[in-house]
Amino acid sequence: MTALEAGDVLADPGAYTDVNKLDSSLAVLRRESPVHWVESPNYRPFWGITRHADVMTIERQPELFRNAPRPILVPTRVEEQVTKQRSGFRTLVQMDGRQHKVMRAIGADWFTPRAMRRMETRIQELAKRYVDRMAELGGRCDFVTDVAAHFPLYAILSLLGLPEEDFPRVLHLTREMFGNSDEELARDTDPAKFTEVQRDFFSYFGDLTARRRATPTDDLASVIANARVDGELLSELDTISYYTIIATAGHETTTASLAGGLHALIEHPGELRRLQADPGLLPTAADEMIRWTSPAKGFMRNAVEDYDLRGVTIKAGDAVFLSYVSANRDEEVFDDPFRFDVGRTPNKHLAFGFGVHYCLGAALAKMEIRAFYAELLPRLRSIDLAGTPKPAATTLAGGLKTLPISYTLQSGQQVAR
Image (cartoon, rainbow, N blue to C red; front, side, top):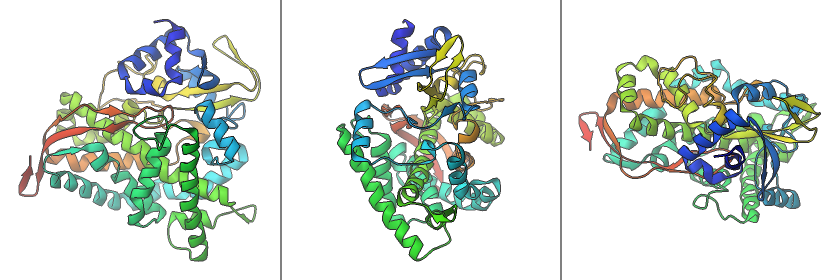
């Protein structure tokens, strides 16, 4: 495989459904063309950045490589439709500099270590609830749709203060938005349908903003609705965008890590037994599950001025795609990177990004994964695949969309088979 052929995977959502091809292609790029120019009929051209060190170099220089105007990799026709309909969000992902700093600060206190300690009991209760749910399902389920999609959703939407009867709607919209390149998840592959999903989010969260401004409550939604920047309430666009990034990214990526982590344990039974025998490995196991799945596939940055990287000149105005998937398999950083190791240390993965744009909810995601497996593993007697797992096609975020499993699970005095 040539580097030119390998580069095609960066502009192909379907590449993420074929792990072996993806890994081999990214390995070629890391070795032969780590700063690689990608041209595709479906996307505007960009530079693919595949080495861990180079991703770090760019992330450390937010003044030279900005999020705007092209923060994520989406097809040209979707970009054009969003511009035409003026339906785009303006989340932390789209922001730079002071604007990013002040907007990030609005919700930051809800994700500090102190805040996480306050949430720990609640997260443990939710973990037990969903492991109990596995027991109720009688030893057979689709782990993604029956369990993994719901546990982190309940946690983040409870933090926002949304009513539980609204959770299925938010889950459905989230899967449509992040799965817009996947025929089974997208509302439709027509770009106009993608903007319809955005408008549905606007409608739902617009109503929420009005309610929380009229009657504030003790939740993150009220903090966002009533936040002020330079003495002014946030605009409707900024408020709705803030809700959307918290509600969607706050559970989609954790869902992918939970499901991908369980799949890895099934495929590596020695690591499963090791983790069951030593629960003290749960913190490193959680990080390894996140590295292994790399649910955020990558983000874009935009060069403000010419910049030389590995002998290649990235021109001012050029976009670069930071491939976290590739960085998290970099042979220069990780010993035996294609080995799933629940005790891996150090583990300098970039699944949460790095620098000023480091994921706001990283600590919550890790706590949820630890809590879930701390509840599941002591009760798990056996587990196997009950069908073929199916990854989602995406260039933004996601993981398995189905994970059929059969298992034997201790539940009180009963065993689910």
